[in-house]
Length: 107
Image 1 (cartoon, one colour):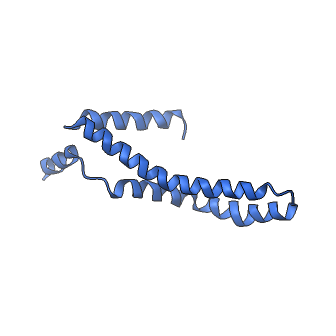
Image 2 (tube, one colour):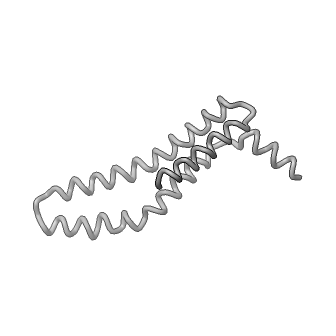
């Protein structure tokens, strides 16, 4: 995720706050979503760090096993972890008032 993508995300978040009826609530909801996402990502990061710690053992066999058994599956599940963090962050979020209003206007 480069600087361009971060700018895109910032524009979306600022836009969502700008069109919200209650800006403080919108910011609080975004922070809550980010905190729930961070819980998932921190667990994944802890497992990666634990695998790196095991890799500190000065044995070629242990290093080979951590590469195959540890880092291989962790690399494969990384996209699923990203989606899981996003879903977990959004699943408990209430629908913002601006989204409800737009949905009702379309009907």
